[in-house]
Length: 260
Image (tube, rainbow, N blue to C red; front, side, top):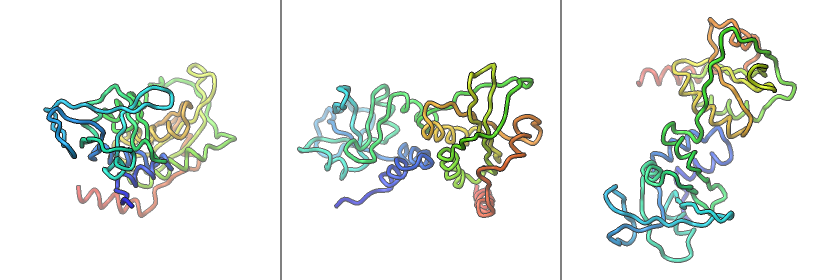
């Protein structure tokens, strides 16, 4: 029986819970992965790609008839996925994504926790480290919006985000509201307000990707809660946060600051 490595454990956690996906993506980009293929010198066995060789990479057919490049988290998983002996190569995941840019990839295709990557997801991973990038928009200061609390609370969203924030000690609190800007949208949408120490954009990048996975196709806004904002921030501060940093997270944040 093969032993599950750290990347495979992270993949299983990410498949079950979106809150753990940013951690998995970071680990994946720093890991060595394996593909079926050969190099120009026809070497057998494990081939470490150095960027100077010409390589041939094998694709597999998907159920819809299109093709994707199978990628494996370990040699054990690779060998368990093939019926006959084949050549294989080792890549860093980041260099593989660069090398095959524009192609579909599927990680551990015969595993119950396998993950398919579209070209758009790969572009997002290479540029931002997550599988989807947020779209920014600026709301004019004098815009009139309607704010309230949803009658049907999106606990699937808030619970995933809260799990993620536990490991982000710079997030002090997170709030949720329903916001309607009649000039921009026909229907209201959820807005998540965050009190953050330091760089808000770094938290937004990963939290936005989680929200997009939890509630695909539904627009969700994120906003930074500040003391000098008399609009959205003032409203959010009057509501109960769905996440609030505890003293243990404060200690971790302080110690990390000392180690930096």
